[in-house]
Length: 205
Image (cartoon, rainbow, N blue to C red; front, side, top):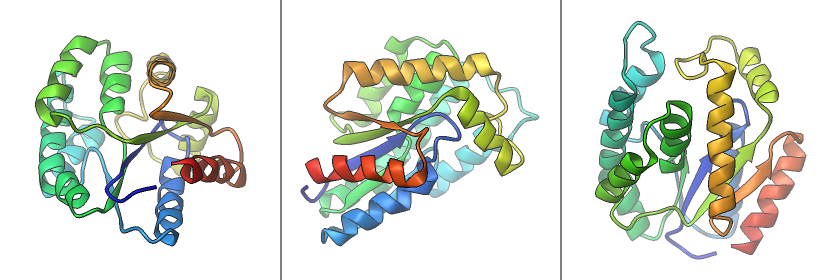
């Protein structure tokens, strides 16, 4: 492991990303590195405002293209204001979702052109890409059951099962395409089992 790594966590709702975020940060800190936990959409004042619109505005009609553009607008601010400065200082940045989520949710889920997403990715990110991505994977049934146990659902969590099937498949396709970066985690396992997988990957970075 080296300073200045950019690590992202991905997966459908209910796969336990938030539970493992702090675990990953604490394990990296034990190795003597500074860490920064952040999220998308969010991470900045502007990003959190966009997050509120996209996740909690069930009464708004948000077109798929608008949703995608809002995601990348927030991402642009996030990269320049938070991510790049932290990486430059040697901090290991751990982000809950990044551009893989745009391909999965807006591309796979909403059916938007993957080429359009690629153009936005190149424009906004330039050469910035995650060094390692943990993809937490579980069946839609498992994920939705966990979401239901949490209580009220946000705008994305309220989508139909067919939407999440497309999202999950896009994630899995990306993992096959980029196996060196995207590390698949079996999120059907209990917390101990998931953390065991995480440690194996962290120890190999």
